[in-house]
View 1 (cartoon, helix red, strand yellow):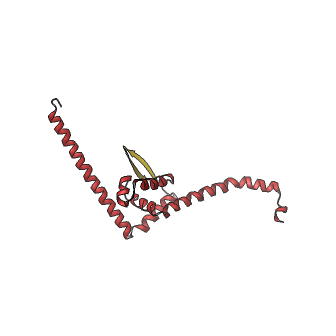
View 2: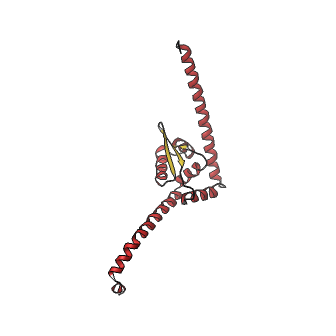
View 3: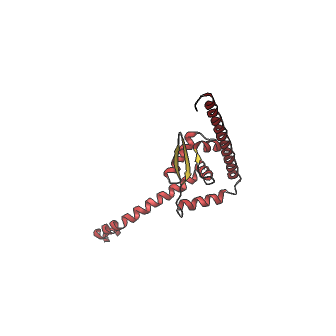
Length: 163
């Protein structure tokens, strides 16, 4: 009954004029839904929490702190990358990830809310402490490696005349 009273030309014109708006709305809603879905996954949530406290993290750092495999860490980081939460940078064999949210964006607002909610939580503080210890151990290992490399270069120079 109701459809008999609608002018097909007017309906078509209405649809053509509103379709881009409806389509844009659907795209925006899907994007926002994906952001919230990424926060619903415990591993992704922990990775974002760890990432929010430091400038850049290597996949191996995340593996060490969370006790997960390289493939699981990489899969979650790649998902966060595709959603626009993080960017990546290759350093030799290693991939380093840093947060990448535009100021004033919904992602930044969600990240700030995440920090506010998780900061007082005991488990979040333990994770942050574990990350700090891992990074400190890594710095000491790199420093020791650098000292060993310098001393081996010095000993090579002493053994080879003319250097």
